[in-house]
Length: 422
Image (tube, rainbow, N blue to C red; front, top):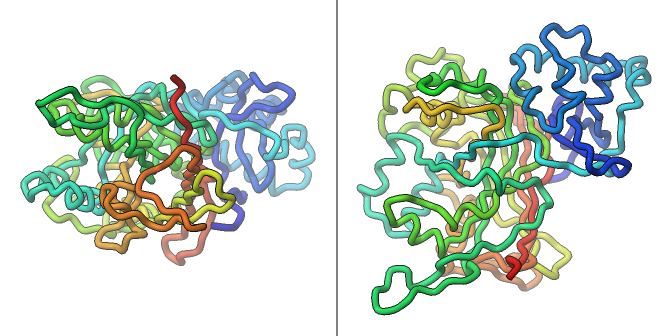
């Protein structure tokens, strides 16, 4: 998808380092091809007039956690000040010492994350996987009553362009009793096209966040790839505990967090009607008539086979077709009084389209029908699962929900599969 992903209407937030100080992390934003060092921007007095702003949000920060924990109104004022300073020639000259060529900086993880939770929120993914795995009707019902999720490994969250080590574990004969199972590197390595939701505010143990309160706890969105080893996952998901080694090896996120304020023009009404009535704490019945719980984000995945110089689009989707919204995920996660914290990350789960063609199937388990149907990825290459050297890049664009106009993007969520070291 071509176009300027970072116009002044976006103002995403991230963490960068520079060639001169590669070990010094600093908050930043990006406009067009310019990265703005927000530590330097703040030190020049850019935000001094904003009530509630604290200099430690940027000037001594190595993550966005302090900034994200500020009141939504303060974050909104900071974003507006950046936009004003860019548009005004006099102010641009005043703050130009904080401007850097975006191509010269290195991106790092934007937030310090303690908890990572991953969900199934797409009806398309839930039904496609149930079909692939031959799940009977009773096993499909829980998805329609509440979001299904699990806690993952926050230590293995990496930023785009970090290497992705092929997972290893018990890969075959897990369901046999006439001999040992097989272990080794996964032969069914997969990607998942997801969105990530970074949280801004902490809650307390015992506190339940209500549906109408969720947006006050959300900082913004990133693209997310929840890499998966389907052969390892198959037996783990069949047991009483759920995914473990099949899911915990790596999660890749795009480096720039797109805020809820930036996403305001993309807020959209629910497109996917509920199949069953939502339980009380997930019900949207009491929401105002003009409430817009969904977001018009359109995403795709390009796969470049190892050794090839050309990437091939293998799937695309629209997040406005989600069954469970980001609000419902947060409300569900805190329903039992579990606390959330600043920097916590929530994955939406694979965002497949419902009742679509194969291009709406947004992981290889779906796209290749669990490895039974190889498909073309360009230059005479086919794939069922990822091979070493394959590059996967998720791209996403925000669209105006009323006009359909493409507004801005997220940047790359990219990783190359490499062998796990011995």
